[in-house]
Amino acid sequence: MSEHKIPRTRLPRDARLDTLAVREGLPAGPWGENSEALFLTSSFVHPDAATAAARFANEEEAFVYSRFSNPTVTMMERRLAALEGSEACIGTASGMAAIAMIALGLLKSGDHVVCSRSVFGSTIRLFNDFAKFGVQVSFVSQTDVAQWRDALRPDTKLLFAESPTNPLTEVCDIAALAAMAHGAGALLVVDNCFCSPALQQPIQLGADIVMHSGTKYLDGQGRVIAGALCCSQALVDEKFTPLMRTMGFTLSPFNAWVVLKGLETLSIRMREQSARALELARWLERHPAVQRVYHPALPSHPQHALAMRQQGGVGGAVASFVVRGSGAERARANAFAVIDAARICSITANLGDTKTTITHPSSTSHGRLTEAQRIDAGITQGTIRLAVGLEDLDDLKTDLARGLDALA
Image 1 (cartoon, rainbow, N blue to C red):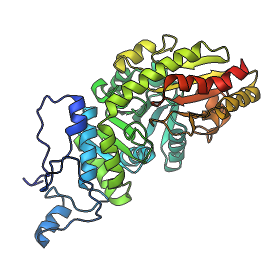
Image 2: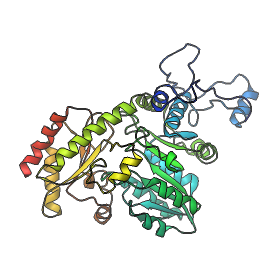
Image 3: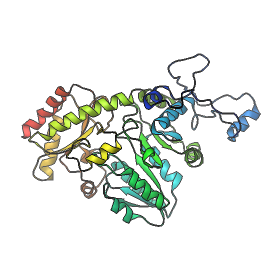
Image 4: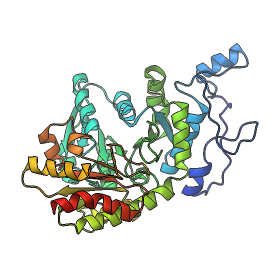
């Protein structure tokens, strides 16, 4: 790379997270815009043929083609990297595209992955699909470090965790898994969707790659599909950008701009929605129709102490609960009745929105798994997931009570 570089925003070196969330990106253009510009262009003009050749050869840093380089996307990437505390970030078309990029960029036939059995259902399906390319995956307990250790092989290249998990909010010991991975010559990937960097920074705990579905809390209002990987500059330059250029996991500039602006309110939203989720979880624990509640900030949560250490004392905005019901069929019917009685909560499997969403994981987000896989992950037919938004709490309680009271 020559001395030609894409300029950086001038910020104090000690700028804190909330400042970075509003200010990091690219310097303003010649018009002096205060709100970041949206660059809807597929290509970029070069001053002469020699400069174009140098830029396409990566001899000069510049924007070339929006499949793999665009100013708006770069602004989002720089801002998210700053919040996660990573050297670099690469945006992708979706969270699943980000995971596919990890697999295609870092794994080959004969390699082995250790993955939590409690991760998002589509993540499990994706890793299983890579068996056709000779990549083997062992699924282990999210919370049992010994199981992760016992699953390691000489050909293990990757440990993949999601913390907290979807939907039961299980928490893994990120520092312990990072030490284990590095001791085995492997990398640790952490899906940080539920917490976001506002609550948890896995890089600071030793993780090598942080994966995001920007569709969730980074956007924050359910508007766009987006993904990202935060990691070292070397991984972005040597492993992921070449894939982006040839395979096109591209994040659109418009979606990147929406996520970029969403990051400005991330910390405020996460803390307020998390506080509401905790109060709602406490209320659910007291309801006679509820068998169990899952939220990391509850003392009843199995990994409560660990979660509070890793997540800055905040439990997150997702709370799941199990309705009472004798047998799987009755439990499913009861869960459906509670969901169908809602008039405020949106019945949708997305999360991270300012609007509270309610869903039945066994038939939606984890519906493509077998019943045995769901049971292994602790997801029963009576499980309901709430992603708490910013509505009035009393209204949300009334909305849930409408269905729960009928079961009590």
